[in-house]
Length: 245
Image (tube, helix red, strand yellow):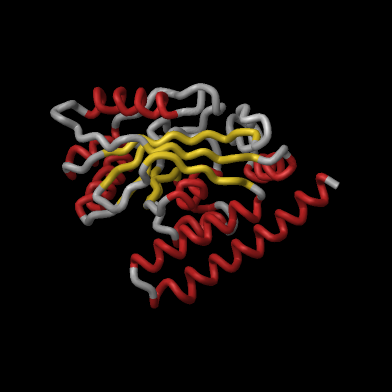
């Protein structure tokens, strides 16, 4: 029965994904940016319901930009969860662009792609984020640079933080946690690390006990003369403090 329920959720998620792609293709060209953002958030909330994942949001999601959000990174679900909590432009690894359906949805949602192994591309993305912030947008990054096991927080890379300094924009720390909906213990169903495949991780999430995604928004910070490395360390401490005990 567990596998049948998971297969049903997967089929519904596929249908909802195709509906989202049609919205991007057919409706987005006639929508304002505000309308697009609202549609992405509503679509993301509905997708979480389809997947059987409950969303909890604590703290104050930003009312608007310019603002850089920095969050810990656990799963492919992170972008969906943060979109459901508050629309933002994401910076994501370039591989996501080639994922079936998900890549097209991410691109349509305004994702900025980065080749993480390329220092030159990192500089290009910093300039792109700076431009977005100067245009008054809310942009989200995962400074760990890769996903963690949900228990530990990896060091924060400081490169992307430079965009907030260059744009003179505040940065808001955000923590993400995935919990067993019943026990409130850490759920490993949503993990996407090491040798996990996207399909394998998705199936594990669908067959796991019900998951609650918890998003904690901290207080925005300004750089106050700190260099990007010092600010990255302080932001890492702030994200860690927001995480579930």
